[in-house]
Length: 91
Image (cartoon, rainbow, N blue to C red; front, side, top):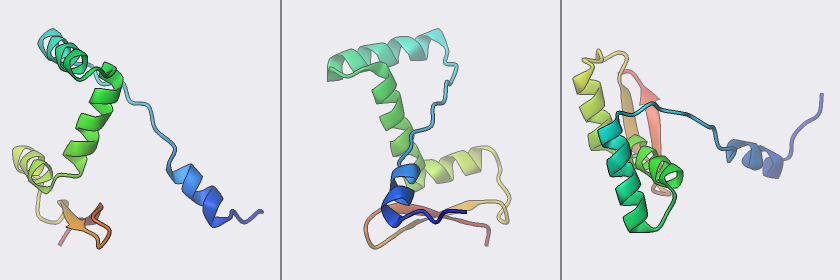
């Protein structure tokens, strides 16, 4: 078994994961128009929207409220000293 250096571990954690959400035609058109207005590809814009959502405490709370997540199952967003959002599970 080999031990990975800190640099190798960091590179692995920076690996991007492909997801392919299915969106309705109306949202697709809006995404295309916004991406065009911003001069970026809609895939990049989608990734930025997801990144913004999962790192925004208000959006995280909104989704958990919408899906009636019990207090024990909720994720609690905590801003670390470097400004990144970390998740803590439950109470």
